Image (cartoon, rainbow, N blue to C red):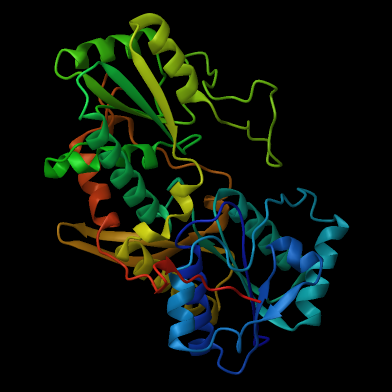
Length: 405
């Protein structure tokens, strides 16, 4: 195979996607020591625009690698671009001509559900052309919704941020005696893994969300109001965690864009589920209600990194390169949990066609029958993913972020 390597990042950034990039780079040094490691600026768009950056000299010292691993967002830049279904589209000729020009022997694409769709299409096109390039999908997403992997890089740190922030919000709310409801909206269009993390503090007797609503089950507004009335009998200040993708029984999204806007992949734009519920509480229960949207900080809060997440992400990136070196292609690398207590993790892989455009949901049996909370069994499964602290390089009290120039 050709000895040069290409890597790219795609989709929504996370606090760990650069740790995975670091792992891929370390793997390239180990398994392809004589090759050039290229990074594509802004994912597939960088390939199409032939905007490839040699990384060998830009990231070379241990300090470089550590700074990269603790920097949030996507150091190479990202994109949201869906490749055509028709593999005869000229766009594929452009991509593979770039692969040939730069003598790329392996391409690693770090991303989520939609990025795995790109990996799957490029793998099929390579097979159609008889091209021996090895194409590997390297997962990331704070949503934790990729199937066939125990969890995803980036989720642990995002879950740690959610659990910590909701715990702090609950602590703040508890200082007042007047009845109030604080509704925290958390990312999760189809799967509620991240919202479920709002309950982790209760495993240790700490304040957390009093009610948790996930998109895996239908949301009933009248039941929601009854849940609040019930909780008010126990305490006067409540914190409610809701996934942005909660929906009524007929499938109507509470947070759907009122103008019906969709993204490039056809997903309905979401924002406003908590705002709508807050208004309902004010009108029906006549009490104070406020909204907190965690928004972008969920995926870029590197000051709240999970050590488990970062170390696993680096190891996953290295595993991806090792997998390609062994002659494999068209795969997505996976986490395989061997044990929860003690927590033991291994690595595997699955055909990317089995994961592309598919979603892993929170099992319904790990959601309470009335839909108002999650089980402690689920929280115990999530708890190891947020453990451990990461020392952040700082200057003048602020983080030092690594930039690929």
